[in-house]
Image (tube, rainbow, N blue to C red; front, side, top):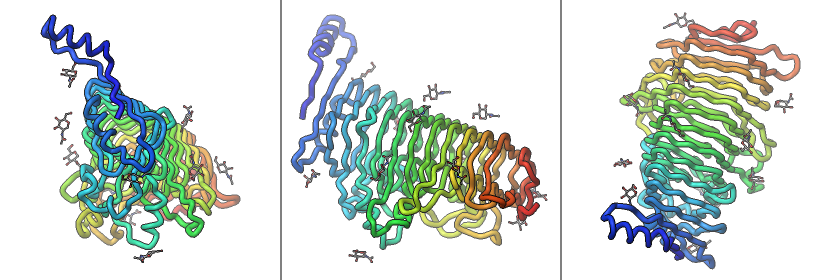
Length: 429
Ligand SMILES: *[C@@H]1O[C@H](CO)[C@@H](O)[C@H](O)[C@H]1NC(C)=O
Ligand SMILES: *[C@@H]1O[C@H](CO)[C@@H](O)[C@H](O)[C@H]1NC(C)=O
Ligand SMILES: *[C@@H]1O[C@H](CO)[C@@H](O)[C@H](O)[C@H]1NC(C)=O
Ligand SMILES: *[C@@H]1O[C@H](CO)[C@@H](O)[C@H](O)[C@H]1NC(C)=O
Ligand SMILES: *[C@@H]1O[C@H](CO)[C@@H](O)[C@H](O)[C@H]1NC(C)=O
Ligand SMILES: *[C@@H]1O[C@H](CO)[C@@H](O)[C@H](O)[C@H]1NC(C)=O
Ligand SMILES: *[C@@H]1O[C@H](CO)[C@@H](O)[C@H](O)[C@H]1NC(C)=O
Ligand SMILES: *[C@@H]1O[C@H](CO)[C@@H](O)[C@H](O)[C@H]1NC(C)=O
Ligand SMILES: *[C@@H]1O[C@H](CO)[C@@H](O)[C@H](O)[C@H]1NC(C)=O
Ligand SMILES: *[C@@H]1O[C@H](CO)[C@@H](O)[C@H](O)[C@H]1NC(C)=O
Ligand SMILES: *[C@@H]1O[C@H](CO)[C@@H](O)[C@H](O)[C@H]1NC(C)=O
Ligand SMILES: *[C@@H]1O[C@H](CO)[C@@H](O)[C@H](O)[C@H]1NC(C)=O
């Protein structure tokens, strides 16, 4: 391990401490390089965090750090330069043992192998480093097994109970499961994030071998900013979950997957999911060659469970109330998406069940261009218990395949403005 302390700073520290008896701290600096040769870097990585993670600076040099067990980085007033990759060993059976990961993300009882917590920190991976998730091994492993929420597949990077944190120019190569999650956090900025879940096993060409590789799930967090993201995944590019408030998203490209999700919401009957004040702009959905990733589901979609309790989370649930209000999605470019804008309130159930009381209002879609694979351009299938209201469209110009009349479907919608044709139950003109 190389821990390089600034001699000058320590000298000043001792001088002031003796001379003035003041609590002035040393500026601590740690530098860590990979040990190489099949050796385990986890100890030295954690030692650097413990030595310099408060009021200090840590530099991880380029290269691959072999990480063999779960890590929490607790950072207080600290900067981390991560030029290399935290490389999580692809030992699937080991990580699936729940005691080898953290269960800090409450929703769906998800697991994390790497948790960052604390306040006033910045992790800058300089576009050269981040996390190597070794996802291909995981995707192959699960190709003939059932995948379930809460089954222990680890989130690649979890920010938990973090305040005033910055994640910059960070790369996450082949996330096994969700790429990012931010939970119970506030005032967090992510500027520059790459996630890439791309199957390269020819045996599975043309299938979506990478479900659940969401770009990020946001939960119980306020004032989160996501700038300059590039996500390749087979699921939700962004998933805005319960009690996400004041979220700003700008310049996000989603390559393949389901598009941007609000939800799922209302899974826990005893917890309301309230999502408020979301502003997203400069978004791009890109359909990949189907041999690589067959799905490109939506531009943006909103989903709730029904009002009925069907089993218990993480895999079942429903019956939760709440609301989604004041959402703007503007300057969106969709490339051959299935349904550009979609709302449904029957996740995990059916329309014959007690309807959801989770209400959507104030959803605004401005400056959209591009095309859909079918004729349905918008589909709002809202709950009759509460309806959707105050839906507006401005400069919404998404085209259907040649000669097909666009369908605008609205069920249980109280107020909708700005579409070029009426929005009704069947979408037929
Ligand atoms: C990581 O460390 C483990 C345990 O020491 C070792 O068995 C493995 O070979 C190392 N992996 C790499 C890629 O260095
Ligand atoms: C870190 O800095 C803060 C504020 O300067 C100080 O109160 C605290 O004691 C320092 N902690 C350590 C472990 O250096
Ligand atoms: C999955 O496939 C692997 C090899 O392809 C095989 O060893 C394993 O038994 C299979 N598992 C199940 C649950 O079918
Ligand atoms: C969250 O962080 C704060 C300090 O930032 C700490 O006091 C608190 O105990 C942490 N809460 C949990 C549940 O970890
Ligand atoms: C929101 O977080 C950003 C950091 O991303 C911070 O600059 C800003 O002051 C915060 N806003 C509020 C209202 O606290
Ligand atoms: C994602 O990974 C695939 C397969 O390794 C690679 O071909 C592609 O260039 C990567 N994309 C990005 C944006 O890095
Ligand atoms: C948008 O984000 C991408 C990274 O995903 C970056 O390369 C590009 O420069 C950003 N564009 C702008 C206008 O900032
Ligand atoms: C969301 O916040 C409300 C209070 O504003 C609270 O009642 C509810 O339990 C929270 N939901 C979750 C999922 O934490
Ligand atoms: C709606 O959200 C925007 C941020 O997207 C915020 O500036 C505005 O104040 C919110 N409006 C209301 C009525 O809360
Ligand atoms: C669909 O839209 C995308 C993005 O605007 C564009 O690149 C593509 O050429 C369009 N395809 C067709 C068939 O119009
Ligand atoms: C409202 O929703 C119910 C249940 O999904 C459905 O049966 C009904 O047709 C909808 N009403 C309208 C006007 O679309
Ligand atoms: C919901 O909207 C439908 C029209 O789609 C309307 O007939 C019904 O009265 C509304 N229900 C509520 C609860 O606002």
